[in-house]
Length: 136
Image (tube, rainbow, N blue to C red):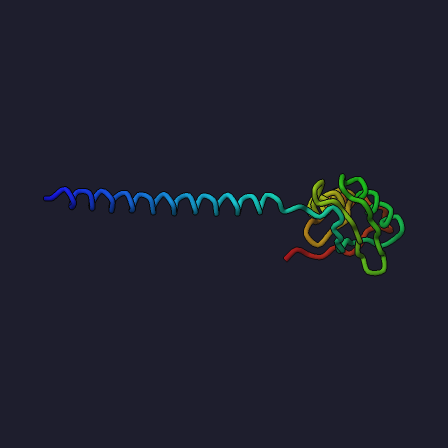
């Protein structure tokens, strides 16, 4: 084997190592960029939701709105008896919709996702007892 052949093989090996390093660094930069972009997604401070909540009367309205406002991060809550909908504005950095629904269920009112316990439902005033949907 000649010296030029040995030098050629060394150069070829160095070139392969360089390409592998270059690809690894590029992949690392890409991954860091993706993670940085995902970490910077900000949650909405004024997210609006319409939540179906079972209720019958003004007592229900007051109880549901009080439970909503007791949830940290809720900025506005207005319950409409006519369509059984709670219109709410909340800060998603402080709470989420599921937490709000759980707090409403704790005072005896069913939502689309979270049902009140039988005990909490039975504690409602007789005029506030709505027709509960059967679980399938």
